[in-house]
Length: 227
Ligand SMILES: [Zn+2]
Image 1: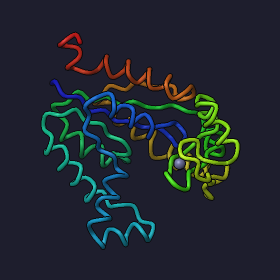
Image 2: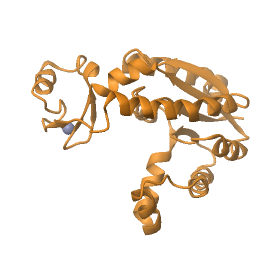
Image 3: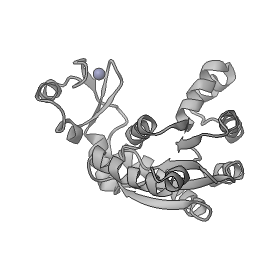
């Protein structure tokens, strides 16, 4: 077993997407992101596009099949799963295809209150679509901070907008759904995978540091090479 499969799981506001990008920059993972796969499929197939437009989630079978195709295309690679599996059925399915991988679940833990605080304080750039969190701006340059204070994107200066579904009530509803789906999923995954809890309350770089330690401790390649 010298391949690693990492499952990145965490609620909205935990910085999961950001951490996935950091991991992909630092390590040679093949990214398996549920959201990206759904978008790509929708681009290619009209029926799928219409289903998604009608508010339906992509069916498990279509997503499962695409995920397996990616795994088979990269038989030697380490894999980073983000936004997949979403439920126990998908987990049961995909674990069968990951028998010769060391499997690691990184669970980004964040209280509901902190998640709500972060999400109600986030804005989205109308141009580059970057999500900007109030607390993250503190670490940027002075110019970026001033730009942000004027309601503009600290990265390119275009106006920042608020998502209309980022009210405390709407966020709480999404979090309740997340807990309902995710807790059983974690309980299932930890029976056959290593589970590491990551505290998602500190800064992006502190979270990345915890993740780096977990990856290095669980990467069969780093363990054998001592690199
Ligand atoms: Zn921008």
